Length: 564
Image 1 (cartoon, rainbow, N blue to C red):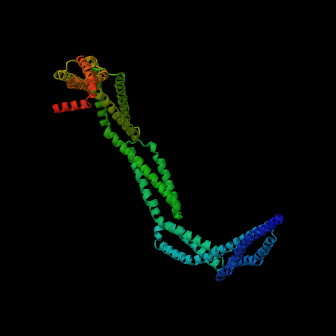
Image 2: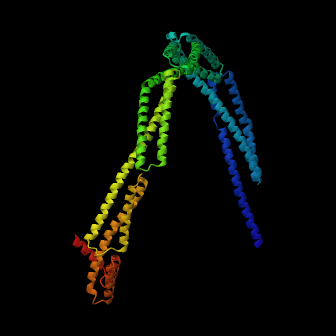
Image 3: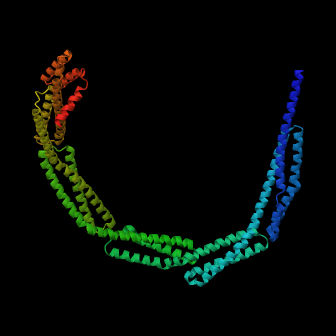
C-alpha cells in the first residue's frame, strides 16, 4: 500500500513539475510573440510615405523601391516563416520536447533580430534622405546669400586684392558651376549627392572668405613691410661693417638672399590667391628678419658694453690685486702671533693663483678688443664671465680676511672670559669666608683644585706663541664648566652646613628622652667636625624624623623666614 502511495505522489509531483516547466516555456514564447507584434506594428509605411513628397526620380526612386521591397519581404516572407516557428515551438512544449523548443526559440530570436536590423537600416537611410532634402533647402539660401556678399565685396574692393582678384573670381565661378550641379541633382531626386555638393560649396565659400580676409594684409607685408625691413637690415649691416664690426658668424648676405628669394616665391603664391601657404611663409620670413635684427642689435649692445666696462673691470682687478697683497702681508704677520691651519694657508695661496690667472685672462681679452677681429658678443660674454669670477674671488677674500680678524677678536674674548672666571672664583672664596664655614670637605677641595688648574691651563695656552685659538677654546670651555660646578657646589655646601647645624641644635631637646637620637646626634656631630656636612645632615634628620616627622621642612621654612 505504501509503495502504491509513493508512486501516486511521484506522479502528481511530475505532473506539477511538468505544468510549471511548460508554463515557463510558454511565457518565453509569449515574450517573443510580443516582440514580433511590436515589429509588425511599426509605422514603416507611414515613414516611407514621407519620401513621396520628394522628387520620385533618380536615387530617391531607387531607394524607395528597395525599401518597399525589403518591407514587403519582411511582411510576406520573413514574419510568416517566424509564425511557423512559433507553432513548432509550442508543439514541442506540449510534447515535453523542451530542448527542441528552446532551439526553435533561439531561431525565432535570431530571425527577429535580423528583421529589426533591416528595419532600422531602412529608417536610417530614409531619415538621411529626407533630412538631407530639408537641410539642403534651408542651407542653399544661406549659401546663395553668402555667395552674393562675397562677390559684392570682391567687386567693391578689387584693388586691395591686386592680382589675387582673378583667382578669387575663378573660385567663385567654380561655386556657380557646383550650384548648377546641385540644382540638377535635386531635380533628379539625388538628394544625398546634392547634400555632398552643399557641403562642398560651404567649404569653398569659407576658404574664399578666409583668403579675402587675410590677402590684403599679406600683400602689404609681402610688397611693402618686408622689403622695407630687408632694405633697412642691409643698410644697417653695411654701416656696421664700415664701423669695424666682425659679423662673419651671422652669414648675413647668404641669409638675405634666401629670404628675398622666399619672399618672391610667396608673393607669387599670393597672386594665385594661395593665401594659407603665403601666410605661413611670410610669417616665417618676418621671424627670420627679426632674428637678424636681434643678432645685429646684440653686437651693437655688446660693443657698447665692452667700451663701458673695460676700464672699470681693469680698475676693479687692480684694486682687488692690491687688497689681496695686503691680505697676504697680514697673513704673514698673523702667523707670528697665531696658529693658522694648513687648509687656511692653502686657501690663501689658491686665491692668489686664481687672481693671477684672472688678470692674465683679462689682459688677453684687452688685446682681442684692441685687435677688433673677434665678435663683440663673444668678447662681452668673456668679460661678463671674468666679472663673475672676480665677484666670487672677492667673496672668498672676504671670508679669509674675516677669519684672520676673528683670531684677534677671539683672543680678546677668551681673555675677558678668563678674567670673569677669576672674579667668580674670588666671589666663591668670599662667600665661603662670609658664611663662617668651619672647613671644606675633601670633595669640594677637589673641585676647587680642578677649577684653579683649568684656569691656569687657559692662561698657559694664551701665553703660547704662536697662539692656537682652537686649543684655547677647548681649555676655556673646560674652565667654564669647572668654575660653574664649583660655584653651584659652594651654594649647596653652605646650605647643607647651615641645615646640619640647625638640625643638630634642634635635636638636642630629644637627647635625654631618646638614647637612639642621642647616639645619632653624636655621630652627626662627628661628621660635622670632619666637614662632612651632607652626611651629618642625613644622620641627624633620619634620627629626629622618627620622633618628629617633617622636621627638615619645618627648619627650612624657619630659615627662609629668617633670611627674608
